[in-house]
Amino acid sequence: MGELPSRHDNLEDFPLPPDFFRSDPLSAIEQRYLEGLGQHNMAKLLVTLSESFLDAQAFPCVKTSRSMHLYQGLAPPSEPNIIPFRAATTVQATFRELKHLLCNVTSEQMTNAVHKYAYEVLDMAILHEIPTPTPQQRMFVRWMATECPPPLRRRDFCVLEVHYEALLGNGKRAFLISQHSIRLSSCPDLKSAYNLVRGSIYNSGTIIMETDSPGILNVRTHTQMDLKGRVPSWLHKVVVRQRVARLQSLHASLQDLRLGETLDGTYIPMVRVDARSHCGGCGKTFHTFPKWRRKHHCQLCGEVFCSKCATPLQTKGRVCYACKGTTVESSLRSPCRSADAAYAKHCLFDDFLDDDDDDSIVGANTTGHMPAYHPCTSSSKLLQLLDKPRVGELSTPDVALEALQFDWLAPGELASPHQGSSALLPMLEVDSAHVLRLIV
Image 1: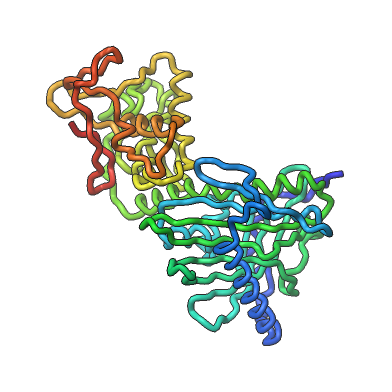
Image 2: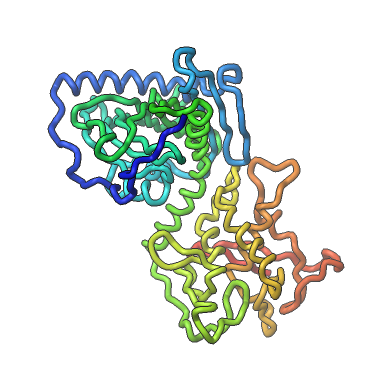
């Protein structure tokens, strides 16, 4: 039988106060023990993730998508619930970006992880940092609380975490994060105070590795977790599998990170609201009553859009769907399709709801030879075409050639599907402000 939630199980309890855990320093004996344990776990996990990861017999692939491969192992005979899972993905990113998303060492990184990237994490804290013999290593004692699907109670974990910058046998750089549950008096059980069931994580972690292609990184993760408590074996398997499969959200997290860096470092002049009577995306007229169709500035290009053509930011303001994609132009060429394709699906779905929407590029300039640029419409075409299934997909699709295969006629005219392909095809360029533009 499953668990029953407590009446005191309240989201308002998190995050815990900064001084909640005792800050007493570790004794010399505790430091030596934890350092030895961390070195052992790190060495074992490094071999698991870099050398014996792809073991078809021990870990057959149970799910494959465009952005991730999921593998399932066999549980120990004495612990049928502890089923190990592995996942792998490929991203176009830098070590700095991925370490910023995965390390979660500073207060800012932990806050961003809780509110943006680590969807199931309710709170986390670094309790101790243990001295290491080399600067390539860092060792911590981390506490974290996680959400569980009903009817399960929330879980928390106290783990020894090691960060290690390694050079693999093939000469490639790698960055490893290992985790293993421990017991410390400075991290007491919180079941009575916060209704948290203390779970266990066994020799799990993540590795980032260089590939033969510059700018392309492999990310692999291995997880072996015991949720403890009264959890049916089938539900335990589902919960752990879902958490491991969230590795595919790394693509969307990278886009959010790059978007935030762009917003923080650039001043964008905003178009006057009263200078626009039509939405820069769908072309619809703004209503006399603002409540029905409000005007919103895109924080990246400064244009004015309606709420359907601009998505809210995590922090403040909105950004149009084109700029949401073009700020991470490199991800359009990633070997794995970004998990952020939901934005394209949003645009497609709106077309079925609005009868007066057409599927054309609006606002073409009828007085000059250059078509007027509307970032939302031009890039939404790009994202929609990328979202379509491909036959015999290349490992690195050429977006500029594939996505822009639609006819382009004289200025101000839209191509008819019955006309030939003799018309000029538009080209794609990204200017110094990282804005995607169509040119003839």
